[in-house]
Amino acid sequence: METEPDYRFTLANERTFLAWLRTALSLLAAGVALDQFVPDLGAPALRTALGVGLGALSVLCAVGGLLRWQRVQRCMRRGEPLPTPRSGVVLAAGLAVVALVLSVLLLLSS
Image (cartoon, rainbow, N blue to C red; front, side, top):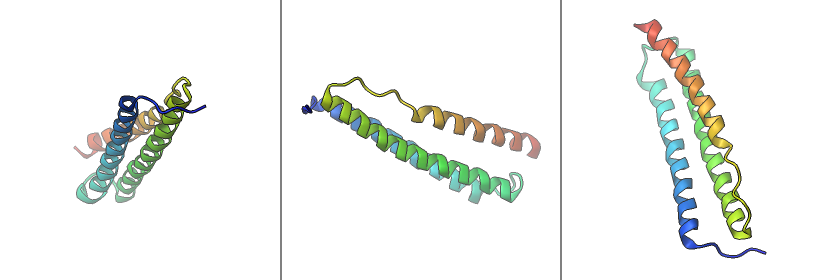
C-alpha cells in the first residue's frame, strides 16, 4: 500500500533530481565548449569525440537522475528501503576517461 511520504523527503528527493539535471547541463555545456572553443587541442576528430562523449554523459546523467528520482519516490511511498545508486558509478567512470584523454591532449599540446 502506498502512502504519501513526509513532504520534506519528497522535496529533498526533488532537489537531488535537480542537482542531477544541473550536472547534465554542465556536461553538455562542457562538450559544446570543448568542440567549439578549443580549436588547438588535438585533432578535430578527437576533440569532437570528446565533446560527443561529454554529451552522452549528459544524457546518461539526466536520464539516470530521472529514473533515480522515480525509484526513490516509489520506495518512499511504499515504505521500502531506498535503492542503491548506480548512475554515479557510470558518470564517474565516464568522467575519468574524458579527464584522462584531455590530460594527455594537454600534455601533448604544450
